[in-house]
Amino acid sequence: MLLTWVIVPFLFFGAFARFVHREGCGGHRRGSECCIWYEILDDIQAHLFDGGECGEDAHEALRLTFHDAFAYSPRHHVYGGADGSVMAHESEQHHAANEGVRDIIHAERPYALKYGVSFGDMIQFAGAVGASNCLGGPRIPFFSGRANYSHAAPEGLLPSPFDSPDKIIGRMRDAGFSPRELVALLASHSVGAQETVDPNKAGAPLDSTPGAFDGQFFLETMTKTSPDGVFRLQSDHALARDSRTICAWQAFINDHASMVSEFETVMTKLSLLGQDKSSLTDCSDVIPVPRAHGHREHDHHLKPVAFQHGDSYEDVEEWCPDMELPKIAPGHPPRAKIPPVPKS
Ligand code: HEM
Ligand SMILES: *[C@@H]1O[C@H](CO)[C@@H](O)[C@H](O)[C@H]1NC(C)=O
Image (cartoon, rainbow, N blue to C red; front, side, top):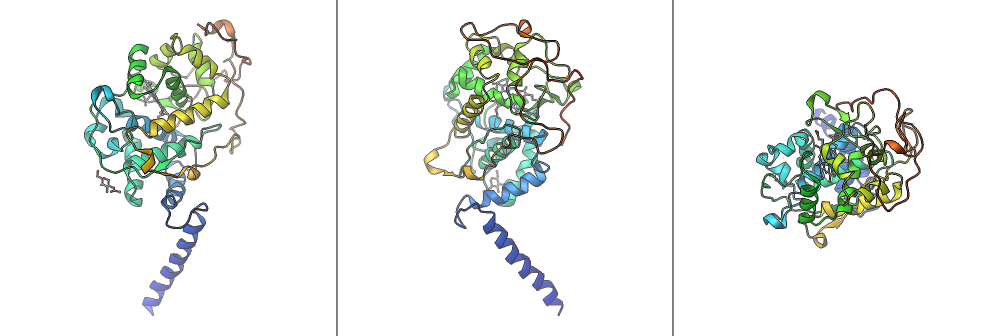
């Protein structure tokens, strides 16, 4: 009798779980390699990203894709790339550049272990899902099947916000990225904040709209001053004025379609550094289609990029010499101080 009470619910839930599993498999054959990612998707959206938000964890998950993958340098004979090494090796987590991603590494790691997926896959998957939660965000393709084996990456391959454009552009070239691709990658700074550069301003966003994947970041780094409460990285400031990057920078201000599509392309390349794409399975269908409209009352449609109050064309320090000026509306970033991104 007791046994029945124990077993019956198990049978019931077992059957239910299998049913959900099949339903949640997005048209993939059960047992196909992509199936598991639908389960992980539901789990991380509910628990890691607090119900599918573009909050602190989503920002950090996106950043972590870069910190894992960019440990790739032909010049230094380092070929690990997007191999999960930053999650596997504590020594790598203690590199100064990884200080701001330790929390998200520890938050993602249990999901990789729970579902038996490799650390490299987990990092790229969570980053793509996190980015898709942002208003107007990208849908970054996801390939599954990276090996779980890795070596700890050597220190010094990740750019610092105090590096010169020469150094950053040179390091990007080493890893196979052009200056334009660098600018496209930096669209990621439109959804995020800083914690560690100035701990007294922890949570200060890198643009006035950290929940939206928009061109506001590119404009706000070109003007003399940033909106109150927004934090400008020295590297972003310099790249917004460098002859090799200024034109792409300016072009992305109000060309959301190119900003998103070039970001998706270059993020795909980043996520495959050190990997053989032909041995991976394309599970891109699992990545949610980002919303173009807010789902909560206070986030609205993706707005056209606009100057902060009081600013106009004269407040941009330098324009690209051979391009028409973009059309930019006057002031939507609120006059009030932009609040920090809350800890999640
Ligand atoms: C190229 C040179 C780059 C430099 C110097 C740089 C530097 C930084 C720094 C210093 C922060 C603030 C971190 C903190 O204090 O917590 C940051 C945030 C961020 N970075 Fe970069 N970054 C670069 C490229 C990239 C790339 C290629 C990506 C692509 C995924 C990326 C994604 C992010 C994101 C999403 C955040 C926000 C993180 C958060 O809100 O917690 N960055 N970056
Ligand atoms: C991946 O490697 C870690 C050790 O670095 C291990 O704990 C984990 O179980 C491995 N995962 C898989 C799927 O093999």
